[in-house]
Image (tube, rainbow, N blue to C red; front, side):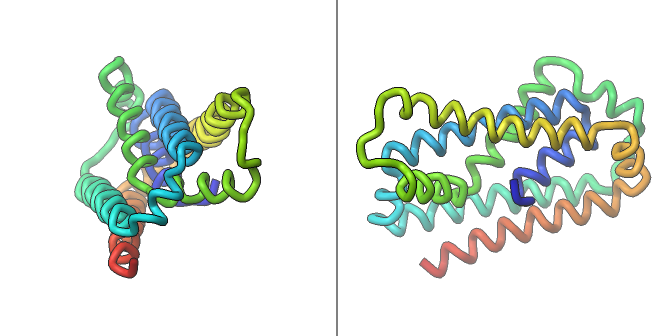
Amino acid sequence: MSPGPSFIMVARTALAISRMDGVAAALGMGVGGVLFAVAALLGLQALLGAVPAFYAIVKVLGGAYLLYLGYLIWRGASEPLSLAATQTAGKGKRALRRSFLLGLGTQVSNPKTAVVYASIFVSLLPRELPPAALLGLPLLIFAIETGWYSIVALALSAPSPRATYLRSKSKLDRIAGGVMAALGIKLMVGARQL
């Protein structure tokens, strides 16, 4: 729940496009969380620890993706948005699919999520898990990820936060794009230190 690339992306999607697009992005976050939870349960932590070069490659690719998203947000900061345009922009299956894929891509671009899940699972779970736990943990992760980011999307797409965003769009988008790019750069620089 700590602010990071996922929070920024969902918040901006809910503010700039629509409530439904924000929720679609939240669903993408949930699916990405499930992918990492399953990977953690299958031993991703062991793989990342055994092959540091693999972890470095994942960090560089994830960082490059976040840097690219930051650039797109920064570049679009000066493009005007009207409230009427944002209310119709998110309509349609294609737009919602794009928001879902953006959420999923943002989530899986951050390998720290996988490491966090793997660390928690290794620390708190017994060596042999019952089949119900193997199924239940990814479902719980999906509910937590999707629930949290849906709350973010619903809260920030309300009229007052949207009006505030629209008044300060250029400044807020430049901040969001800069933070997203900085997180991407930090991830890539961290890969060099491995």
